[in-house]
Image: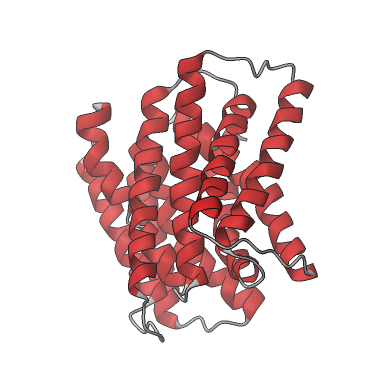
Amino acid sequence: MIRIYPFIFILLWSSAFITTKPIVDNSDPFSALAFRFFLVAIGFYFFSLYSKNSIIIKRDNLLESVLSGVLFHGFYLGGVFFSISIGMPAGIAALIVTLQPILTNILSGPILNEKITIKQWIGALLGFIGAILVLGFDLGSKIPVLGLIATLIALISITTSTIWQKKLSNKLPLSVSNFYQAVGGCLFHILVIIFFAKPFINFTTTFIVAMSHQIFLVSFGAFTILMFLIKNNSASKTVSIFFLIPAVSALMGWFFLDEILTKIDLVGFLIATIGVYIATRK
């Protein structure tokens, strides 16, 4: 069963890029994320109670989990949502954050003392090449400078969060750790709203459906699987599966949104798949 977790994660995480656009079309990105992680925190709180895991933890563990949530749910998702809200194509945002495995491979060696093999480097490069082929160079629209900056901040944040989470290994139950990370993300976006943003949410049917998808399938499902994978695998091998996300997102866009999927996209998907296999196999 554990072997199928990465595949479930890829499907759920990729689907998030499909539902982000409907959300930011009906709200500002930070209000949407504050609302999302308020509900996610409540969900993990009750799940912790149900599973009899105490949410009373050591101060160090609390601060570590909250900071991880600020990096992942705050800067990473905030950067992605904000960039898409001001005109950054979702596929290009996905491609930029797909650089994460390369940064993680570079940093996990000196920080986590992980040995990065030649096969992992080859797999990472193939995955990146495949992702570029899937998304292509026909951007179709100008990339907003602020959107590019926000996406680069998201890239740095998710890389830092992954290494940080692996370095901690605080042995907290996933439900408790996820609860405090959601709290950290919620508080981050509330502060952004107070000082920088004008909050608004239109609770249309489209918004409710898209937000429900991101809460239940992404935050409760995909994120929990990601934390499990980081906790039980090397950081560099875990993030290698991220290279499949742009390709799968493109396939989902073709299937659900009638977006064009060319032969080059299919070749890129195949190359990315081979790269992930090389980077993650024992």
